[in-house]
Length: 185
Image (cartoon, rainbow, N blue to C red; front, top):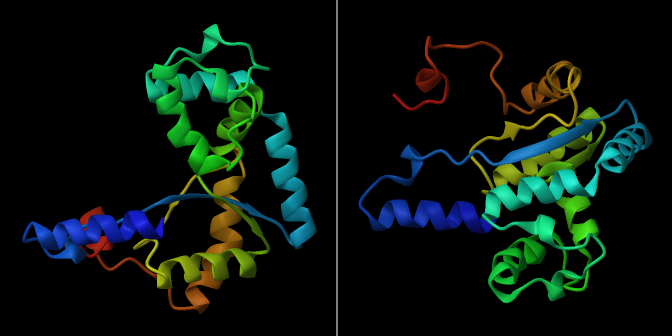
């Protein structure tokens, strides 16, 4: 996230635009629990439910590569050369192990589409988001729900108050439009 953020902000300045006029909002998938163990159990349950084909089908669409022609137990390294180059970039982001199978890759990708999963108590999640914000990984974050219903409610009810305590989230809206709320006017 940090390298992407810096790349975009640097390009803005390079092309004569003010870097602050472009807001970078990376997605995160929070698993919030009253305790860290509860949050970890939610994440484990969610991740275990993912069928590898769900991830591979989505990845096939994202990459423009037909992965259905390969066995789930085939090593990613054995994928045809033209398809492998596209897969390699994904594998490098998700795993250092180039010998993982398509089954493994499908489960990993299907869990969150490569969106980072944040796991912990409301305070821990707020602290992680604050750290990412101060490390210039994003100007804000898109909350990607792990499950519906419930994810958004948990985030709003449990994490937002912590972010407000840190002075990182508004307590009321001052504008009437999304542009106003994002400070883009």
